[in-house]
Length: 455
Image (cartoon, rainbow, N blue to C red; front, top):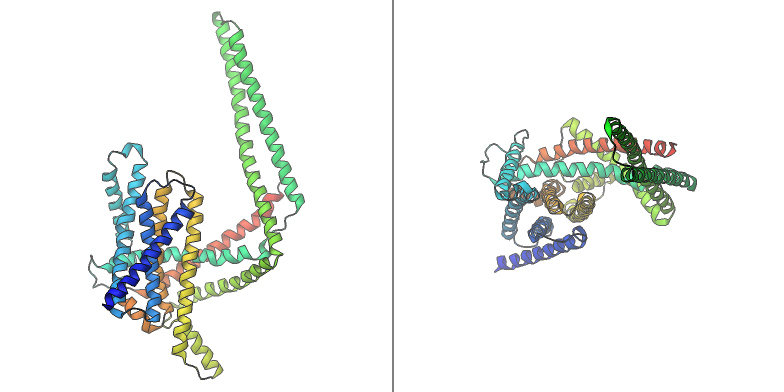
């Protein structure tokens, strides 16, 4: 009876998560597109539901909600379903919709979809060869084989996003990095844009007049007679065509310049709005957050470097370790175990909420940036794949933020993976991503004023 009650709680929460994923799909991702394939919507919502359920089980583990046997069963079932979706279902449908968009392969799309899926499985399986992610005793068909490979991809993705976010967040929030933009700069750029548009219009008028003249000459003049007349007609026609070709090339170059000037003008307006916003109370608050995150970024890069150089991975969760250091330093009586459990619960909850919110925002921006009516189904499935791998790898990394007594069931469910490897791999990719982002933003910030100052 207890198992049925626990199962009903889990099923109800999964239905709610599925509904939220369905609404997010309709209201955010596909609000500007017609939904042609409901299977895409179902796969995305199911992936979101089972991903959130894993985070729910982590919270239940800390709070002691549900029986231990029920939690273990639902952990196993969730992992099996999410791995089935990520390794078999989503890759197959991605290949199916890619082939469906190719007219030549339309009749044999099922065959080519299977070939694409087999190609994916080959590279997916080969991915685990260079990494020490498994214990040697695991068989080729064990669930650990799938989790370990999904974890490598997901942890890499998390580290890339975290490294870029740790650098981009202070760069975006802090007013220190805003370049000074005045109304004179905007007016000068707008003047250049208008001059370019006038030149485009003028050259297009010349092309229209030249075409009309050539057309009228062809109608009014008699057909050329004799060899000399034919040569004269061909020479005049080729000279006129060459002149039009040169003008058309000039117009194409000016149109490209006008697009760049328009984007630069829009960028200046956006920067000016950010300068005005930074003077408000809310802007000053985000500016303070920017300084805080810049300190956090430096500390995170420093700790990642230390972890890589010394080849170390923490054995104690950060909360417990921090409380122990504080208590020993101050010399006070304090129940470290009791308070570490509660603070760890709050910390894990914050990590879960911010991870889900941040990933959904990133997925929405990414979808709007590259989607089209033909590619939207493929891109949504790719986002579902990224989302599922991201959440599975989050469980691997969140495990270290939990006190040891709460890690047991997660370790049993995930199997004997090389957890230390994932934390070291995260540090390596995070460091590379953060340093690359610093270099990229430095070059972009340095070149921006020079670009707008150019005549």
